[in-house]
Length: 256
Image (cartoon, rainbow, N blue to C red):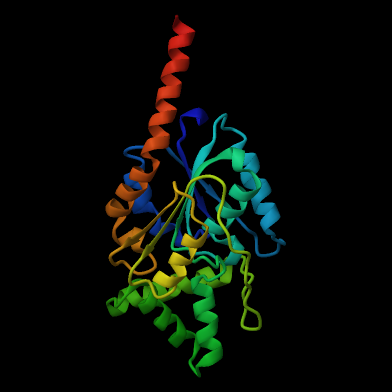
């Protein structure tokens, strides 16, 4: 049943979804998780308004506010986290809390910016830049693994609805949300480093939380899913318990 769902994980890149799965498997052992993916045809136009409208329709099946979560690997506002952040700002009554993974305080600073800056600043081939991005996103990997990851990143560049390009890099509005927010990162993430992550603190409320994984690079939730899950569950626990108590009271009132 839809009303059993606690968390909705937002995805905007079909190619990069594989890196979310270990974390979602851990979360699903303790909470009910649903997934929403922004699918975009190459011949179709796209906009953040369209994505937000689609997720609004999707969340219409729930009679209660939902915990939204996502990783910032996709392109600009079309990152999973960017879509979730925009939705939470427009429809706060629909969102119980927001968890953003690997998202800078300037939300447009995705790995794609890192890629395009290298292409503009250095006389390197596309393949050389992709190899560099693999090292920065995942750390040093065996040759075959590195080649496979280069292919994954190449597909993400080709298939994701990006706002960035070699000719123009987009900046987006900074700021937080009205509901509780948790922002997670990795201490050795070159794409979203500690200063970029801690920029969120300027707009934090008392109930908000920032956590950094000791290591794991940009996809730290893939390398350390259990550790990340424990932090997220700790953040959600007060709201989850409150929801459970409310449900119990409603049930008792109905049966008395």
